[in-house]
Amino acid sequence: MPKTKTAPDILLIAAMLCLLTIGLIMVYSASAVWAEHNFDDSFFFLKRQLFFAVLGIVSMLFMTNVDYWTWRKFTKTIMLTCFLLLVIVLIPGVGLVRGGARSWLGVGAFSIQPSEFMKIAMIFFLAKYLSDSHKYVTTIKRGLFPTLGVVIIAFGLIMLQPDLGTGMVMVLTSVVIIFVAGAQVKHFVVLGFIGLAGLVGLIASAPYRLQRVVSFLDPWQDPLGSGFQIIQSLYAIGPGGFLGLGLGASRQKYFYLPEPQTDFIFAILSEELGFLGGAFVLACFAVLLWRGLRIALYAPDLYGSLLATGIIGMIAIQVMINIGVVIGLMPVTGITLPLISYGGSSLTLMLTSIGVLLNISRHMR
Image (cartoon, rainbow, N blue to C red; front, side):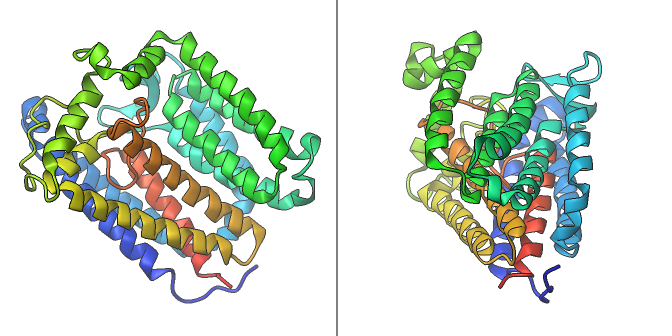
C-alpha cells in the first residue's frame, strides 16, 4: 500500500471551492424568480443546494482521508448495489418520473439519481479490473469483452429510464479509462463505428431525440417547441457581452429559459457575468483538469492512475457536453455542469469523486 503524504493538492481544492462558490451564487440568482413563483420561497433551490454541498464536502473530506486502495475490496459490492438501484428505479410507483424519465428514487424534492452513482461505480470497477488484468487489456476475449459487457449492461438499464445524456457520459468515461489502460487503437476504431451506428439507432428509435437533433441543426424550425430552449439560451448569452448585465440582472430567467438553475445555468451566468465571468469559470475547470491529470500521471500505481483518469475524464466530458449544448454546438442532452448546476446527486457525488482524487494526490510520486 502506498505511503501517505500529509497534504492533498491545494490548487485542486482552490479550483473546486471557486467553482462550488460560483455555483451556489448562480443557483440562487438563476432560480430565485422561478422558486418564488412556484414555491413562495426565493431560497427554495439554494437551501437544497447548500444542504447537498455540505453533505458533499463532508463526504469529500472522508474520502480524502481514507486510502483509495480501501475501495478495491468493496468494488463488487458497490457495483451490485448500483445495478440493483438501476433496476429498482424502473419499477412503476417506486421510481420518480421527472422530465419524462424514471430516474429518481426518494420522496419529493429530496431524492437520488441511481445513474449518477453508477457513473462513479463504473470508474472504480474499471480501474480495479484493468489494473488487475493489465496484461490482457490488448486482447478482446479477456480485455475488452468483460469490461465493455458490464458497461453495455449498465448503459442498457440507464436507457430504459430513459437517460441518454448520463448514459453517454458513463460510456465515454469508460472508453477513456480503457484507452489509457493500453487497449489497441484498432479495436477502438471498430467499436467506434459500432457505437456510432448504435447511437444513430437510439436517436432514430425515439421521436423526441430525433427532434432534438433537427432542432440543433435549425432551432428556428420549431422556435416555440423543440428549439425553444436553445434559442432562449443564445438570447441569454448574446446580450451578456464582455462584462455582463450584472449579477441578478438576467432577463431570461423570468420564465423565458425553463428551469435555468439546472442544465442551462451557464447561459444565465454568461448573461449576468458576461464573457469575463464565463472565461473565469472555464479557467477554474482548466486548473481542476490540469491538477487531476497531474495526479493521474504521478499516481503511485496503475489502479490510482486509472481511478484518477476516470474521475477527471468524467468531469471533462460533462463540462464539454454541457457548455457545448448551452452555446448551440451540440443537441440538448440534459447534462449538468459539474459543481455549478443545481442537482443533489450530481453535486454530492462530484465532491465525493474529488475527495478520491485528493486522496490519490496524497500518495503521488
